[in-house]
Each structure stands twice: as C-alpha cells, then as structure tokens.
Length: 227
Image 1: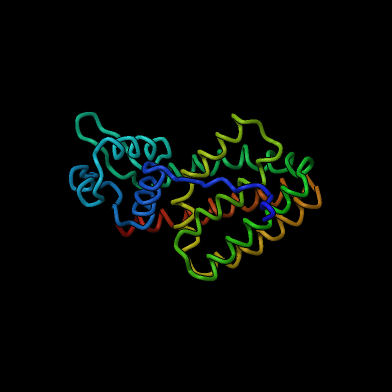
Image 2 (image 1 turned 45 degrees about the vertical axis):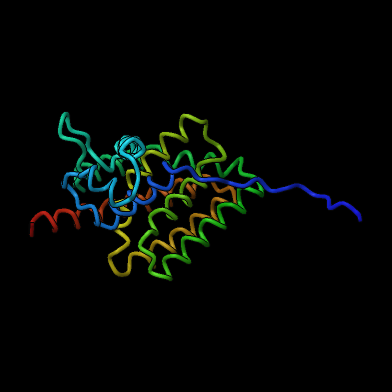
C-alpha cells in the first residue's frame, strides 16, 4: 500500500486560561458581569468548576485589557464604561492607527490582502446575524490593516488599545443604522488599502475613528444624564 504523503496539520489546543478568558470577556461585554460590580471569585470558580488559580491569572489578564479593575484587599470589579476613557482610547487610536494602516498598505502582500478580506467578510457575516460579539471581528479587521507594516511593539500597543475599545465598539454598533454605515466605511477603507493609496487610507480611517468617538461622546453623555 502506498503511504499517504503531505503535511499533517498541527492540532491547536487552547489552554484553560484562554477558554476562561473568552468566557469572562463575553460575560463582561454582554453585561452578565455588570459594570462596577465586584467579581466574587469563590462563586465564579464554583460556577465554572475551576480552581481559583487560573481564575486569578485570567482576571489579571483582563485587568491589562482594561476590562476589570484590581482593588487592594478587595479583589476585582468590572470596569465602568466612561466618556473619559472612550475619549482617551479613541484619541490614541486616531494618533497611531491611521498612519500605521497607511504604511502597511504600501508593504502588504497578496496574503495580507486575502487575510484582510477574510476578516471583513467575517465581520459583515456576524453583523448580518446580529451576533453581539461583532466587536471582536471588528478588532480583527482593523488589526489586519496595521499588522503588515508595524513592528512588534507598535502592533502590541495597537492591539491593546483595540481590545480596550471593544466594549465601546459594541455599544456604538448596537445603535440601529450604525452597523450599515460601518460596513460601507470598512469597504471603502479596504479598497484604498489594497490599492496602496496610503493617503486615502489615512484620511478614511481617521474619519472613521473620529465619527465613532463623536457618536460615543453623545451616547455616553445622554446615558449619564438619564442615570
């Protein structure tokens, strides 16, 4: 019998920590773990049938992502959405992301183009399905536009900022009509990026992030006024 040839695809095994991170992240984004509420580690560990050691490690990771806050001798609470944080996060994105995406457009390969198209297709699919985790796919698309031309440190900074922005992106896209606007803006952005039109990429992405921040300013101000 002739032996089969070809490469064996590696089995990707996700750690308990990765799985736990995804679970808690989704509970925070969905509001199951409410903002400003203490995270009761004993109850949560029992509910998830895990020890407190991986739970503490995951909470430390979520703290780095700006989703929870650590308090001395009082454990962790879920971070509250705030106008000041939104302002800081999206201002940072405007300073760094448009230029990084523009530079990346000049060096992106055919494989990079394929990856960006795939991420945009996945984002549009979850938006059509009304999947509440569209912020994750939005982040993956945006990061695919900056990855080809950035160094490791710059990419890590942009990734961290986009992770913190996830909750605000979800809040923003949950308002009717904004998802359709975002889809059109993303398509225009990707077209310019693939065409290596760096100036247009920088302009479109700057306006895209600025419009999101402006919407959030009004939305968070309105919510605070009625709280």
